[in-house]
Image (tube, rainbow, N blue to C red; front, top):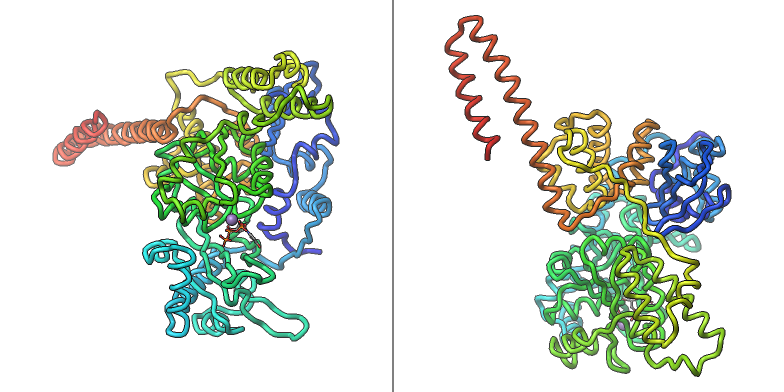
Length: 583
Ligand code: UTP
Ligand code: MN
């Protein structure tokens, strides 16, 4: 086969693959804090300096400098080609590779898919307000859902009508064609009847947005109860990867950041309801188990996550299943439990903001939640052991040593069990993650550039702000300049950047290594926005200085030539530049 593996398939394979599991087949990995370490398979050594990060899905050797993602590991270690590697891992993950002829997915294609989502949203909104539907559906939204017109507007809720091909016909008139409509997940092909029809029919349509506020998918809620599927959702598309998206975050991230707390609910309507009531620091998990990617996304905006799931056992179990990922991402976890029989939505409908604030204020720490009602003296040895293990494992995920100790203290106090039990369950003392202590002022330009990129990588939501101030050509160090330009490409195409994706886009091994060394830079950050701004300003200052130097050189030439007009002009400009530098 000579085709090209589409970039989104590569992405899909990478997301479906766990680097720890793959590398673990070749190397004996030992857990150390958040990472795994081993003796480096690429050079001879006696003490382990090879480190694998499950969170970032990359490896890095502090000894020989080798590093990369799961693909580069197999390529280096097994001497496989890139395509072989992707095929091999795709097979393992059960992903079918459909190779494309010719070029990679172009920007245009992605834009087409975005356009299809916009057209669909407009269509669903028009349908909601069409004579035929407006009255009953708005009545349903007002009375049953207790939604105001403003909320319907704000969340851009629409309606899929009863026709089989209403959207299809509309879209065809808007310059959209079958292949992209199918790829966008909006139109389905029936093999049996060889017919094309709308995926969504007779449903309330809730658009799902990315962080740039562009619609990328839909959740479709059945209008009547007793339908076989309460929700029909968009499938995974090049725009929409369910495990990476949190419903509502585009609307709520500001509030989340301000409060430094995020409330996680399950349903779209839970979120809409809370938001309407005035509690705005919310995201919805959309009913799936919380993924590590979602947890990491949240960790960029807040330090504490409040799980606010349905009071039924399904909801409470889902809460328990989400804990791991949240702790892994470094979030403090609290639990809000609605009254029996309620979910956040129904509680809000009945008791409004007041009821919500009562539950918010009464949130329990995860340890309270997990140990409440357990009489440890009454439980058997196996149950005891299980609980101790579970808590010790969670504790091991807490990166901050003080917080970890406090967690273990509290656990042992609550259960009336000795600290040593937890310690031995955790497999001895867990050590904090390795930090590279090489950030010391005064920094050279290349170091500032490097640290800025490391910061942007960790807090990609600030990339846009950096882009507005710095051109990639403002970077002095060639490798950082290249990496920055690839970051810009990635963010425009996928609206997100990750070490792993960067590594794939760069063909230069040196640069790949640089990326992993960037990711491994682990300096303390309290206010990323401010720190990034400082770095940008420093670089702008250096840029000014370079301009001043050039002008001074030009001035010298002008003076030598006796061109006094030119010299005066340059002098004025230099003075101006110096003034700007001092500000
Ligand atoms: P719920 O069943 O709790 O739905 O599922 P809900 O949002 O509270 O809906 P209402 O209030 O009864 O209308 C929680 C979330 O799980 C996903 C949806 O994202 C939903 O919001 N879900 C649920 C599905 O994707 N498919 C389903 O069939 C059910
Ligand atoms: Mn619900």
